[in-house]
Image (cartoon, rainbow, N blue to C red; front, side, top):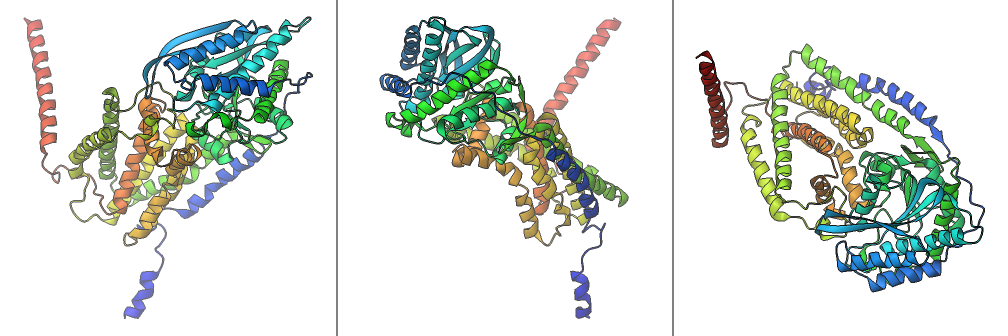
Amino acid sequence: MASRLSPRRGRRARRGSLERPVNARLYRASYAVVALALVVLLFSFTRPGPLPAPVLPANFDGEAARALALDLAGHFPDRSPGGPGSLRAAQWFRDQMRQYNLKVASDVWTERVAGLGRVRLDNLWAVAPGQSRDAIVVLAHRDDTGTGPGADDDASGTAALVELARGYAESAGAAGGVRSAHTIVFLSTDGGAFGALGAERFAAHPPFPVIATIALTAIGGRGAPRVDIAGDEPRSPAASLVVTASKRVLEQTGRAPERTSILGQLVDLGFPFTLYEQGPFVARGIPAITLTTSGARPPQAFTDRAGSISAARLTQLGRATQQLLGSLDGGIGLAPGTSTYVWTGARVVRGWAIELVLFSLLVPFAVPVVDLFAHCRRRRIPLGPALASLRSRLAVWLFAGLVFYVFRLLGAWPGGAARPPNPATATAGDWPVVALLGFGAISFLGWLVAHPRLVPRRDVGPDERLAGQTAALLCLGVVSLLVLATNPYALLFFLPPLHVWLWLPHVRERRRGAALLVLLVGLIGPALLLLSLGIRFGLGLDAPWYLVELAAVGYVHLPAVAITLAGSACAAQLAAITVNRYGPYPDRRDRPARGPIREVVRTLVVTVRTQRRRARARRRAVGES
């Protein structure tokens, strides 16, 4: 008898049953929409062409620039914002420009800098007037973190700025000299090592109409040349600017500059983040790039010494910048503003086509989930208790978010301008353990309040488990639509959980290990962001805290935080079901007695309501009398 029943136990569950509620046929059929979007994507590839090279050859003197960089770094090794070295470095820049009869303008303001407090910052710029007031800006920051001389980052960029200005000043002052077609601005920013504060200030309040920006950061290192294009918003600089810069670098160095990988570019669009100074300009629709010899992160102070500066590399990138300026000054063919795209070799794929593919990938998730909802309705499986349980979990996560921002107001987290802190500073790596423990304790109290209504009080049946999973998947669908409305590229982090967790209802209860594996695989999407911060930007295990810090200073906006908390609540419900700790929200008869905290809250609410009713009654009585 047992041998006759055993095959029946191993037989695959019937499609549409409680064991196989997700319609796999609908899921596969929905990929027809994705296939159509991919066809459109293939036809969106374009090959942008570079602007023509200027007629005059480059005459940038790399040896002179190296001498200037060593002079700045040697005499003022501590140029941290607000310090005496910063003031002397600013005067050094003025003195250098005075030699070429270039008047220096200044913009002084105060800013709260993470790790430094409120300090005085000073942007300086010299102008080579052109036939048009439209400006091409070349910039470099002259400050450093104060923990090293900052010879490459960014004394080399500042020295190149001075050498470039010399060339334009001598050209304009020569007999019969010809003025450039555009105004050329040589901008020395302050606070660049602490989140591009000076670049943010200039981009927000430009004294000239800016048509393009070239940032020079650590261009004297011995690493490979690199062009950085990421912005503070999901935008990309004009492709013609990027390809022209790459062409000019190739002509001077004999090799094409490096760019971020395809996956890295997608991550940068999904989570706009950069440590370089082109970011604020790109975010405001101004074409901007950064030329550097460092990676995604500027060089660290302990390696940034005088010996790290190469005169040959300074000559190459200085001349490439000079030629790029000449190409941009010609101006014909430079696309204004910014767009969105991803580089794939020498070609770009348009951002709208990528957005279409990401949106289409929501369809294979949405169709089976709607069918799953209909499946529950057909079987008369109530979803109300599951949705109420999810609501309570969402309240717990939002409460944690509220506590986080209260701690921010109380100064528990590092504060400052809404800019990325320098990963090399103590702010980025020193976790405030006491504040984190306090935050965790208060958030845990919030969970304790909701806990009695979320844990199972009896055996939970398979229909109730399915209802809980359906409610969580439906909420994840709503969260994905909110992501689509705010930043479609951020779906890159949400699509893996959607498509993987969709199959959790198919994993049988007794195969808990398989369900845990499915749950963990779905976390690949969010983990991609942490891996990007940890590996690409060298943050390592400090990446989670750095991400929290970006939210604390306001670089990550509140809507993005709220959407993340909502998605976390959905994930928490799926996790509770997976580990068999899920209970549908109890009805009034089964609810446990209120604890002391809930009793205090209820008493306060009742008291306030009573006082309001009495006040209205008194006003009514006075009116009648």
